[in-house]
Length: 428
Image (cartoon, rainbow, N blue to C red; front, side, top):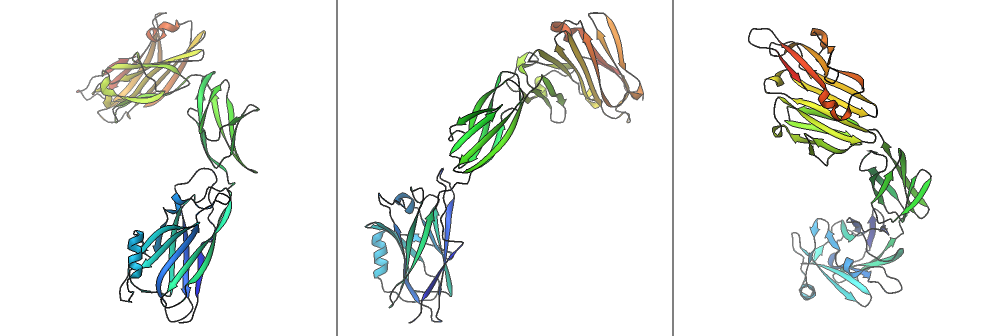
């Protein structure tokens, strides 16, 4: 039988691996084999020979070579012992119809690592055959290098034919900062915030802020910084001549109550405090600047009070937790007092269902009372109050430690007059 095999690598013949961290991914090396004659050869054995590595030129690590997976087209190769493999080779090979299984044995021979495959019976090759070699991402401890893997195809009654496949390992200088973010985007002055990042294939890391450059251990993925003022931070990753960087911002802000309300649909009290510490809800401390708690933990018909401290300021906010009957009308009613040195700011926020149906409020009136001065102030009133709104007032001279007690806000709700419902008032 005359003819030769043609070997072709599908997708290139370079095995490019990172010289930093080992990736869990595997490299797939596909070899397409064709025969240039009409008469198809009977394959008796396929053998791959890898350089097993030497002290001078280490290419392959045996522990990785032993993890090689092999497929012939869609057939998975079954690994057997060397004794079982030699027994299969010694058996008489006869061509029969149907798919034949493939068996493989791995063994060392001098400085080579051999991966030999044999069909369970003599096998007639198809017009072309794809052999898939699955190798671990890191197959060598060398930073760079090349190796020729010898592929030998045995044919019954013919001399075997060989193909030399060069696999190269090149030092990978690709570097990328894939993520860079602070645990909190805002902080109190003097507060510590942890910066987190994920840098791929970085040999060196540098952190820049305010003109100061600090080198970071490339094995680290976070760093704690002390924030004095609003500042931009830049993380730069370096590999050889290549660089990549990413920026993030931490703001020093005054204390801010972003959210505090009763969610009746989810039956939760929810809060979100920016740049605050010593956060308490009904005098019970919480370590979470944002979070939620079950409404069932609180008493209907009474306010739920949040307090928090910031730099030169503090806040006290009361959210009314309505009774089952009141929740028909009231979505949200809140009083917030922010304390600064020498003055306070009162914020009142309300939201009701639309004043249309018989089961909702017809009109509301909101007033606040300064008990320290024994004065009553009408904020809003009448049917034109609207279903939602807010009102702010700067207060002076109010004792900060007693302001929450001294400033009372009342919502008067007039129910739709159908003779069956009465109005009510809520004070927080």
